[in-house]
Length: 245
Image (cartoon, rainbow, N blue to C red; front, side):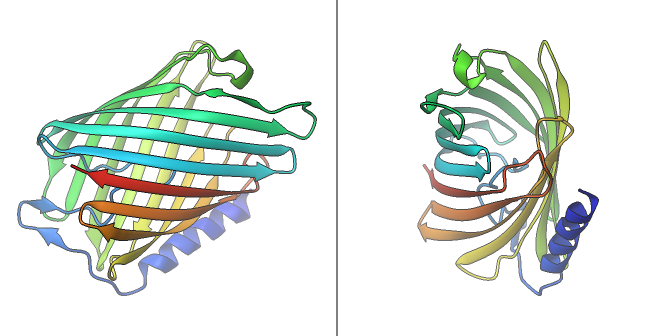
């Protein structure tokens, strides 16, 4: 709905108006957080750097619930190119079903390249392919792929993120888009994320959350997704744990 999208834009703008400080290194913009909830970051792993992310989540609506548990791996080939791999396990339980459906979701393989990285701005582009698991009950038996572009910058003491992707398969194609803002005020970073898609079966979400540095090279995050239209789940919860090596 238009008014819900307007509320999302106002919330992101309001969060961006709160004073904060985001650090930037001389050699390039430094990431205030390691992962977003539903969107992708423009930041890549450095050469030889390895990142592991575990995530669990639930989306719920009047029709039922959808649970996921996933593991993602990212590796920096060099300072401007990385590869990534993610595999989810999914469980779908609808009110009109006799039993829940469960199985492995599509295996996601991605490649990303850094196009520009300065003290206050970064932009990267990549290609992602979703490989089918042949799980027809979960609708995961179709190959999908598409390009994406993501950017981030510092402004007014905050860090902003935007992203655009295109996903296509044999039957349909759709655009995805996102915008987010983070406040690096200390060990706990508040973030606000908005995501959407042109897919008629998709939806728009607003996700407020908190990101915390739990230890050296270890980050944890908690986010609550709120559906903004009739195609989105009513609400959701996401927990992420990230470790860099």
